Image 1 (cartoon, rainbow, N blue to C red):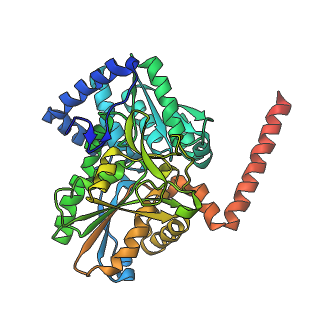
Image 2 (spheres, rainbow, N blue to C red):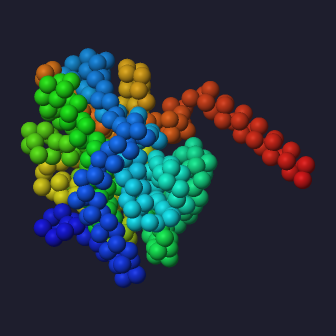
Image 3 (spheres, rainbow, N blue to C red):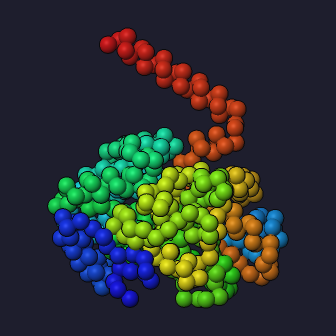
Length: 418
């Protein structure tokens, strides 16, 4: 198979001006892959800075509630910055340091990748610019606040649907003009080669840990492993721990939004979803696009799952049947989120809750001596505004109104003082 391709998907469709930059990145990445000391440096760094290994939590109450398979949750929410994103970002940070670059840029949707990149830049002393769709800026204001406080410049992108794909486009434009001193920290297993392979490599630490943990706690491998899928980095991370075991079914859950029939979703791997092969943002995969190749608007209650494409690796794994794909609607996500909070005292991110939806549908069908793992890719505190709105919590609404009035009064006071 040609390097950088997964079946028919992948590649590196990049402008001539970036050829030398990608050649440099490929050399640095391949050297790191072949250097056992680099991986050990990465593992040690994550252990000391990012709370790895993250726990595999036995969800006793949920297991009892559903009465089928024993449910285990891989707790990437306990990773530093609150999600799996730090795994890839800190790895790329070590690579950037090797390459002698002084600035990093990134795109972000849910804000977790942006926050992880801003954190990494602060830790390594890099200048940092984060591109974020204006729609996502509004949904993820707490993460924007922290990115800025960490020293990053956050650029709100007003083009297109004002979401993740538009932020990625803007980041590529930046890179073309700043490649001598800048590295683009792509946040998922998408984009031109070597990014899909490289991000998957750093995220594989999730699956390596989960495999050892479930064997130690349950005594055998799980029947199924569930992960939400936007671009696909958390899914690829945990799936790699079980890829070689055909008896372990791998299940990717996409954002069903308001339902396939509505057209307001971000599903790329199910029949009738409206996706088709295309080349965009430097690689070939399945995109939600019209007959003219124009990218369609997407929708998800989870800002991190509304990407218009999917990892070329996952597109291939879905096409060959190694990964089974499903979708969860916004309504189902809120219901699953509520159940996990009430029964386990754990607050999943909106993205992660998609995986819980499908696991909850299937757990009762499996024997009690089997186990399933749900990859909880992040924590839900970043989603407080979206969650509170979905629950229509009156006390929260009163709080926001009162807080807004206080800010407005303070602003008027400052203006009078000027």
